[in-house]
Length: 615
Image (tube, rainbow, N blue to C red):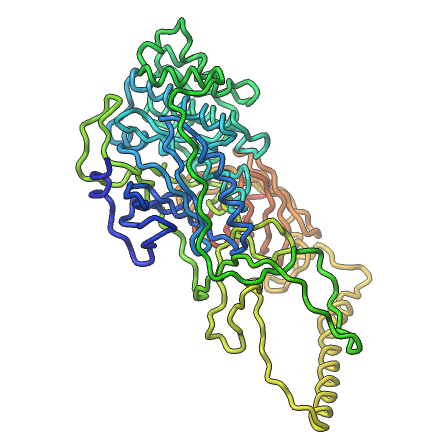
């Protein structure tokens, strides 16, 4: 089964791992949204697909346990319509997932290369993937990323892969639950809002995936993400290309309200009903397993759960600190009562911190997600391919006129950040050892804390006098700084009438919106990357510090807050809800009396601009 895959795997690149846990890495299969996929071999010589996720964990043992625990339900999933999750672990703070290797391309690749599938093939994909979803849900797991690229077509039928990965990433706060992915074409309405996400979201994605198989196109179009999301929430797709046997159940599965959709077990019950001819066209083994899942019985091909993952290798055991409690103020030890012996602590494994140079991080290239398998010869597909080329499974990224790709990515969580004590995922960048005055990170010390080592001063009269003089000097300088930074601006603002909506000179700094900007302005913005246009309406309050921005096409209303500006140009921040994206706005007065309105976001190459005229 693995010969075609081995031949089609790309050579390892510099920086690729040669071993992850117990698995030897022999080739690269591709890079997807969540991580890089490698061809590996287990201790028994069995070829496997190893996905090394992009996210880096914080280095704390709790992060490892959360990640592996979140994948535990996925590892219990049985059924020949699932590409089994065999193992999961963490290597040098990088999580990885080991999956079964399937000999065939993804549904996305097959349709992209050969066009829509016929009715019989769509029926078999419908039943097989419904069996897989029912098995996933019965095990207490969710997929939440069901799409054509995660349906692999092997010689014995379809296999669903990558279930459990989304939940595992959410468990370590790699991204928030309910986030909107780069291409929302197969997301359910509740996933776009982030509210009420459950098994029904997988049922919606199942129906959308079948429409892709039958039509060769995403069911809600392939326009900008904002337009696609609007159609998902409000429009119903055309079901005419579906076989008659699937049209009604797919329509019910696409209900906007998750409570109105059938469960995955109910899908199987309807698809494989005794009075339906569809069951007679399916393999007997698939029908038996589907009916068992629909009724809650144990499927005939129940697989034993995969063994629990072995503990990730780590450094030699060290003495762990006591459980973390609320920090108390530090106290100086009393000289008269020396401290007693410390209580004994059990040794635990503490991951060794990873140090990387403080260089600009590079994002993974947006290359297509490969099929983790060799060519496909079942389900009425084409003859087996020999080139082993990676799958073009990644749906083309579309430019959103208002939403940028940064809006769908979670910020890395920093260890020790009091704002989110639960954050356990981060892209770690520790200071290099060669920075003067920085000690290497010692076991037990939290990463990200720089320790400055100063030379010890000898005790003596001269040092004492020098210390007193230094303290006085610092005190005087601090006082001067306080006067300069706090009191002086207040003295300048002592005008009894206060600042008003003065236009001021073009170069003069302003603290409020000048009168020349006041009023309501309208125009048409253009996405600088895609050329897509959309209307914008902005209302400025002269003499105030905020403005209102309206995007009628997307149905978004946001608030602009003045950060700094002059009489001719304002720098403002845009706070707005999805599907639009927050960012920075620059508003500049043009010579003809119009305004130049420009949106940007740090770290993103996307943007849009408009010429606004007063109404």
